[in-house]
Amino acid sequence: MTKLPKTVIPNVICTFCGSTCDDLQVTVEDGKVLSVRSGCSSSLSKYLNYSAERYNSPRVRKNGELHEATYDDAVCRSAEILANAKYPLLYGWSSTSNEASRAGIELAEWVGGVIDNTTTVCHGPTLLGVHDVGEVTATLGEIVHRADLVIYWGSNPVHSHPHHIMRYTSMSTGRFRLSKKNRTMVVVDVRKTDTAKLADQFIQITPNGDYELMCALRMAARGDELEQDVISGVPAERIEELADLMISCEFGVIFFGLGLTMTEGRHRNVDVALSLVQDLNARTKFLIMPMRGHFNVAGANEVSAWVTGYPYAVDLSQGYPRYNPGDTTAIDVLARGDCDAALVVASDPVANFPVNASRHLAKIPVITIDPHPSATTPISEVVFPSTVVGVETGGCIYRMDGVAEMTKPVVAPPPGLRSDVEILRDILAHVKKLKAVQ
Amino acid sequence: MGKYSEEYFRNVAVCELNPEDLKSLGISPGQNVKITTKTGSVVVKSAIASQVSQRGIIFMPYGPWVNMVIASETHGTGMPSMKGVEAEVTGAADEKILDLQTLVKEIAKEA
Image 1 (cartoon, rainbow over the protein chains, first blue to last red):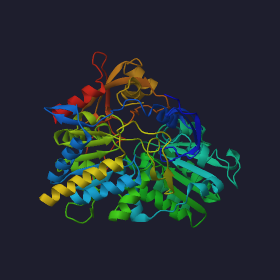
Image 2 (image 1 turned 90 degrees about the vertical axis):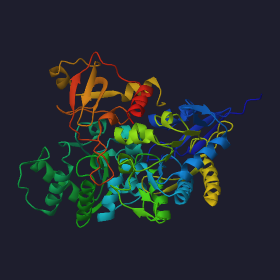
Image 3 (image 1 turned 45 degrees about the vertical axis):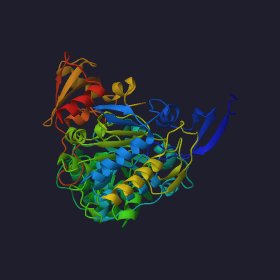
Image 4 (image 1 turned 180 degrees about the vertical axis):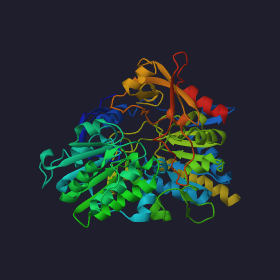
């Protein structure tokens, strides 16, 4: 067989984290990724190892064991499970394309139940905060060119979003901010992270102390006197200095991570952060943005919002969308033992959910669609290996700031493997047939 | 790295502690430790915190091992407390760390 020539593909969009950097140069030879330039450690790991640990055909459980099955058998079994379920959970959606999310919502409309995305254990509280308060934001391009004060709060981008600082904030070259010298970087965290080591200022706070500190900052920014000497482990004068820095900058931004959403206070932490930024806009220009984790978690929210009206945790069991986080969210639905089947797409809830929620998943029939075996695979009734979005399949995704990007495949998928979209549409077609009979 | 790789196991089935805390607990770095919360317990490998932690704070990477000790209570928000959770650390030199396959089997068995 003749070898295909070596090709260098420029400007590839990385489908790892929410930064979705669009400057990778991927060298492909003989249908395989040979090397990646400009990528961070996470994108290198993804693009060089995407073909490791793959199934080459679907699996269906028979007599308690997962066995290789034909694609049609796997589609039929999945459709039966979903069509017969009273209250299925359709979960995942953040590491796949908008087209897959759209197909998933249509499927959810047909089978009823709840469709939720990984936001639920990530920036779900952020969205609740945004519903309450609103959000002062911009695209990352504005921040590159203008920001002179960058605050990372409860976020460790050196590890979670490795090129974020270099491409979009303190170490990027902007039109009006040429280098690191023109910007101040502050990190607020419970420990001195590797991001904190790069910062001009590091403020260490006590765990679960974000709400109080943020309130104190609001007071200081308004000129009110702080009555306590130390708040959340931070001396009052240090808080006043930070408030002064925030007021006196020309263009500031807070990027916040799960340090706000996963701790006590949750959406209230986000409420007060958003309110602080609103206050600051009376004095200067200030923005705030969540550090979205998965490469298309923002897209999963956007698609869900434009189709159903709600960004996640949408209950369609009554025939119309209902949204009540804390009730219709995946963890609560599972922990209460409400759902009687689940479809998991591009996600690994058994690895990422608290053990009680995973235990319920292990009790019910689960259909998993994922390029790689996961901790959810062994408890599944049906497993579909799918193609990798951004590597073997294209599709539209949303960057963390809501900018839409069109990913393209750089290599052909292994023979016989289908995309999430194709699999979901085939299951939906079969569900429609079953529902017509019912 | 795949979920079933040695690298994933090495990187995720761990608990990072402040070196002073390790010393006062009589645990040498790399020794197995048991993490117990009100939800349950899990055995992982101890390590000196690679990113400086103050005393009394431990760090565990997000994944199947730490989720064995995380409660599913969301206080009406959909989000469990995955950070800032009170936990007890004890030495567990004689106890084994479950690999991912065995851990998932245990979850399924208790279901």
